[in-house]
Image 1: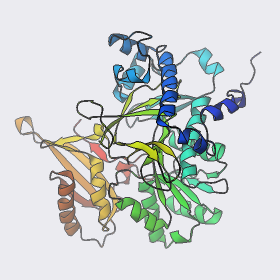
Image 2: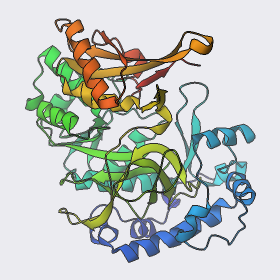
Image 3: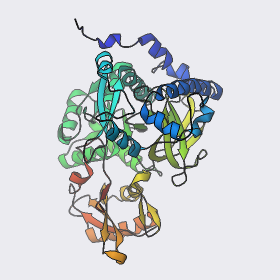
Image 4: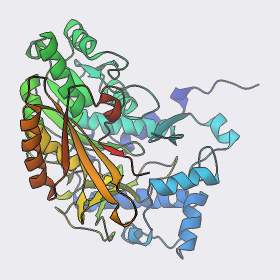
Length: 470
């Protein structure tokens, strides 16, 4: 007779916390390991993940075709012998072996015996990419998130308002597990503006005493706008710290504006659907600490794939050191970042650090010989107080035959109807020309016009590129 499969029996909890220390232990163990100690730990876990990956056709077929055999990879030093993969390769994996792909388990026995959650990423058209999460990966992702939240000041007494929706996307679940399971903070899962209107979000925060937030920088700005529109006093809230994904902000313009509006520190974090919270800022705000026992990070040149040194911006290639379901080995995220050397931080941690997020290489548009990244428009737009920070880049073809060319238009929302659209357009034209290195067309639109295209308040990610060339 079949019996229930209790979640609490799925893990050796003492071993889990010993191997992947949560806050309170992390700072005294992995968080202060020497470079040699962390390298040895990474090496052992890397070899375990490689051995597991050989069991899946996705890796086995790719590696054999490249001339590799089991046993050829003997240390982390051999990692460059393994070719990176991208989301394009994952899409092919789902075609070869639907519905879950040939890179992760899908047998009936596995699903019966394991505790598995289905979460997805992507999928603006067609079905999204499915990633399976077993109990181990779910809890370690929670620990990753908790490490960052703790370093940024979250404590058991805090009420944290989570404006990511608990849906098929992963971000809200990582936050919930991290705050609830591994810190003991009190989560309030209001979800996005589609689930709980922005005005209600603020009402709940005031009524129930929200002290911390986890939300995107774009939505923080939107909530601040709603506060102005409705006469709500943001500074009257009990907000002590805000945990966010700030995005491109090299000069700190966006962060300063948000901190002034909310009267609270805003901390940056970086994570991915498949690997979780890879890096987090501490209260020093001097780069993001990488959870080096959970992920091995490389930075590669966007054009050549050549590995880059510290301080050089390129595509982040991530290898999960804990994921067995599925293994994630040399995943080219196509996110642009840079690493900084290890060293003791003012917070006491000693880790490799990651820069702020600087854009996505797969959203690059070649315009008159210049590489243009939509997210590179962020800072120029955020600097001008006449905008509300919302924009979308629209790429299309103009003309036909040999005269056909790329048309690149940046649509920008003005802050209010009283803003002179013509003057703002002229100034934005000049500012974007300076930042992008090429002239683009600018259109000024009314506030709220772009929400249906960007997904602001409706999705867990904000879209900045509308590609009409297809």
